[in-house]
Image 1 (cartoon, rainbow, N blue to C red):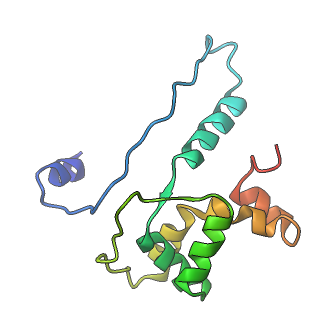
Image 2: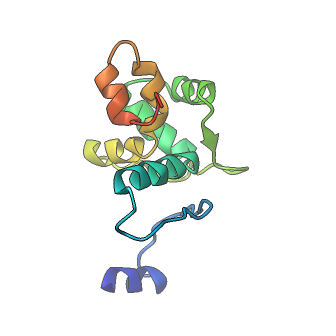
Length: 132
């Protein structure tokens, strides 16, 4: 809680944050709820709301050893949604490879279709709901 307090007081800059919500997911009583199905529904709705910025693309390009435009073109080809009307090129990528991977993995489910034939297990890991 002290960390959240520091954020709200402006003592910690967390950059820009995109917060969105989907329509509610109706539930029955806990004895009737299929929690596996509920989790799948929630994950699907979360993935639908993901927006990717140039910051995310640059992190992906760095860890995958590709040009940012290659990443952007791949994302466009699978219907990725991008930050509306703004870019955040001013943010500096962290030097830590682990942190760069963390940024890239925020939108990695978009890459699942590219692995469907060559690496089906990766495809399933990146986006379990892809083949439903």
